[in-house]
Length: 311
Ligand SMILES: NC(=O)c1ccc[n+]([C@@H]2O[C@H](COP(=O)([O-])OP(=O)(O)OC[C@H]3O[C@@H](n4cnc5c(N)ncnc54)[C@H](OP(=O)(O)O)[C@@H]3O)[C@@H](O)[C@H]2O)c1
Image 1 (tube, rainbow, N blue to C red):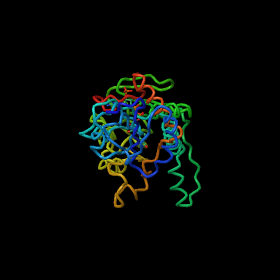
Image 2 (cartoon, rainbow, N blue to C red):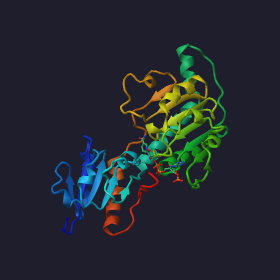
Image 3 (cartoon, rainbow, N blue to C red):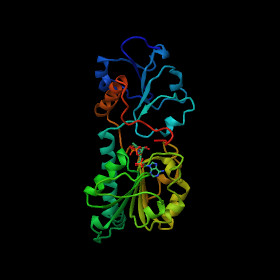
Image 4 (cartoon, rainbow, N blue to C red):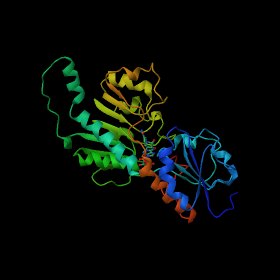
């Protein structure tokens, strides 16, 4: 147990590029001692941890932890750790993440809406043929998941003039968005572009599957949630059957995507390396610092994860 007045914050970032985070977290030194793994000192002295991709069991080795500040938005991997301590977890909430994702989804939606894949095909054939896309307001776009990041995507798409329909568990309102709950098939029917921005939970694993695709007719899919949302074996058959016209996949069941995976070479599929939204330390550290102050003041954390819900 840390009995000093200053709490100990352990920065446990299991990636190579830690320095930008340490610089951004430096203001916390005013009221906390910052340690950087692997120089953690006595694990029993650690009060808080800022963590990213720790090995399973690592957090369970910090016996007096008071809270976990998670650098990402999705906590699926974290919650799978059987040794996860029973302390509050705050997921990352930051504009650099949500606006970055909104840019990515908006770019993909415009790309499909303005028929860029068709023009790429025509160019390969040296074919000069103007196409006539509908107006954005005539294009039904569906956003699965209306959380911090999903809402930012839905707002950006609505701002571009698309007809936006959003799907969430409880139906929280989003201005300019036709919010639906309940049957996924009913939600998908009529959507021409689908963006999946769901968290990965037991309820959402495998949600992008043959049955869901059967409700679509030549739609474009953008999956930026998690690889586990997509039943990968169902994607190419749905493209072959014309249920889907194309897909942009940023996340995969196995990452990095194995070199022999058929998604790499299918011209209807765009692969990006889990890069649709990147957390920028200089921007995102503010959320961690504010939560550290909240925790020390005994206030509830912002972005508190509900473990039973899984997000
Ligand atoms: N590719 C990347 O680089 C990247 C980066 C960041 C995040 N992500 C992914 O994006 C996900 C979403 O982030 P976020 O901040 O928007 O999440 P969030 O704030 O936790 O919101 C999750 C949303 O999903 C809805 N939802 C959850 N379970 C559902 C279900 N069974 N049926 C229908 N709706 C359901 C929730 O409904 P309610 O509103 O009713 O609770 C909520 O609207 C993350 O969990 C992560 O997996 C990916």
